[in-house]
Image (tube, rainbow, N blue to C red):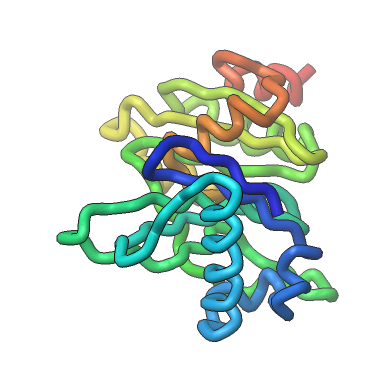
Length: 209
């Protein structure tokens, strides 16, 4: 378990499958086993208090989760004003059982126009990019982290093509993640930037070469 203090109100926590196993949790259980989740959360907050003096007593919290690999997950924990509801834990990716069958999870969160998908190979990222290239108008970057390729796109002209239409194509090739600036910044900080600008166009040219 790795805990980083982003600021006085926010933590970043990286959990591996080994960390979860200590609490008898598998990734596929994160959305359904409240008792085990509460034990895990208490353990994380006790560690955050001892390591970073991060106090959460009587403080509403928002928790966002996004997959980094099949064996690890990133949590962003944010203190929110007491007047707001504490957000539910989001699991923004499809989980697979031993036979590779997908299990349904909650729909990932988005900021306006932002979509983040990961792919097993650069060819998958390129194939998806080629499918949307002619309709997509916006910003795009490609990152590599833990042997997966992460495509970030910001759809600047939703009137021309909706983000939902773009994501329906991308989902045929990869896995969607919580698509917010928090996830984007994490990729910038911890990932290898493979294509800085116009990644969709560059990947489309790559697959056609």
